[in-house]
Image (cartoon, rainbow, N blue to C red; front, side, top):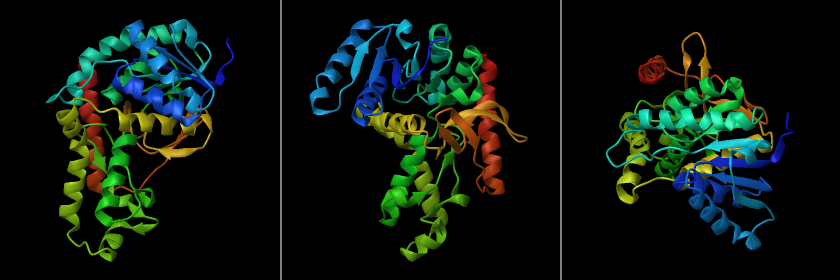
Length: 314
């Protein structure tokens, strides 16, 4: 078995998301080697050259276009291959096209790499994470998706704007599907340990229900708004990929709402996002958070929505 290089990553799929993720990882200085793979070899070569030409302003590393044989020692394989989301198209509308792509891509990855982490970024990420797990045969801790890491960042950003505070001091999660059935977990939300409702009142906001509904809808619709305005979203997810890779490479044990296979009494046999400890070995444990009865019911409904889609494609 090939020894894994903890400072090497691979990106499969060099569209907007893959290319932006490659740039973000170059800027992060996490890796010393990054291989880009795409069905269009010229596209991968062009992106690798473009980013490499900026290395004199960054840190030494090797960025190149390659084939699947080049990923044998990669610690993290980021799977961004798939069709993009078009205006007016939901994430779940993409499912059949991208499941087909994964059925050809994942066996190629596992043919050469059996020990790395598969980080799924393509949408619909929850469905594709489950598909990647089933096809790869990897243990569940080493196959997970970007999930609602970006949705959670959007929630923190909007709450920070609403409250006039640094969004990094906001602690809140979007859970469930990365998509239309996602849930804002208001019950556990706080600002530097102060319960959200109390902090809102400290800042002069008292219409809690209306504000929560508006902000949750704005988070849910963020991708649609961006796609309508600029045809694709890629910077936010690229920064999310960077953040997840930081947690892995540095073995941070960070708590992030990644999408992983759920095996609890309430939800099982589906991948969706819940807070989890992420480190060198991937998903190292679930983190239970306080949820109201309504939030638990919504989470179960989100899981059922995803299971219905899986039943059509598996």
